[in-house]
Length: 301
Ligand SMILES: O=P(O)(O)O[C@@H]1C[C@H](O)[C@@H](CO)O1
Ligand SMILES: Nc1nc2[nH]cnc2c(=O)[nH]1
Image 1 (tube, protein in one colour):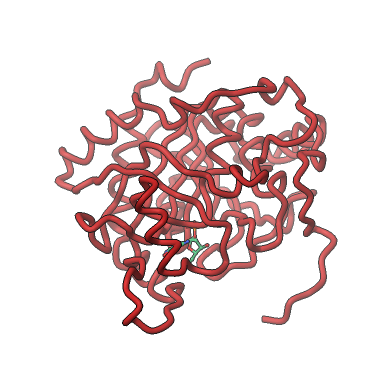
Image 2 (cartoon, helix red, strand yellow):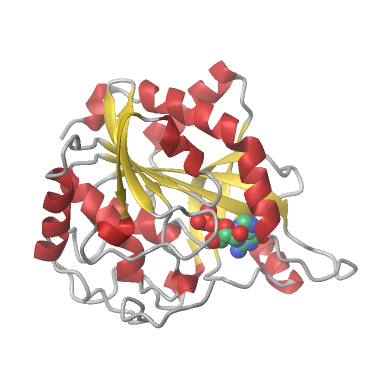
């Protein structure tokens, strides 16, 4: 696909691009669409995992290109639309396609949808992703609950909260020691057991991408406590928690990271898509049941 120059892409570190009023305007634009109900849960579908959005009942699709000021998806496996609908009695919105730093989007662009979903009314953000496996006890195809993360770009200054802080989005300083909701993790564990789906738990590390990791980088990530590595999720999780949302994260392990120089060069994207396809049914089954198991009290103000 030819790449078109776009004014939509910039690499500013500061969170200056979208004011509260702009985010509110986008939220109101979406809520005014016929058939759209204020969602209680936002779900970000990772690479190859968009099938979950197709399972919603009473669906309304809105293409990113038709949403004012929204970025567009440029990656295979990310369809580029919001899908509103119901899971059981709960109104949800799925992002069928997310934005990544390596596409050239700023952190404010990557996380814009989270703030839009917050102003539309969500209380819980579920972020899914495809990730490379670093843990010798895990296997390709496993699902892993994210219990914590290592946000390498943020440690280097690319934190989505850099820049002037509007307190209507959240506080200036915000602790991350309980970033991934322990309450939602407990619900997920119970649902996994009931469905007989094995759920691993571990630490997700974010590499900005688009290069997959070198052997030395993989070894470094293992040494600092990462179980899997990907190219997303941390920015959205941080902005969601800053806004007071409960966050649940899940990785599908789509490939083993290469820890041995005897392997040739590997680019995993096609494998990522095919494992997403082959494990998609379990991901759908898990989320349909997980969303239904979230207590009403968790989705109240
Ligand atoms: O959007 P996610 O994090 O699921 O996508 C992963 C990271 C890259 O975008 C892509 C690599 O295949 O999959
Ligand atoms: N950084 C990174 N992201 C991925 N997404 C899916 N697999 C991988 C991987 O091995 N590394």
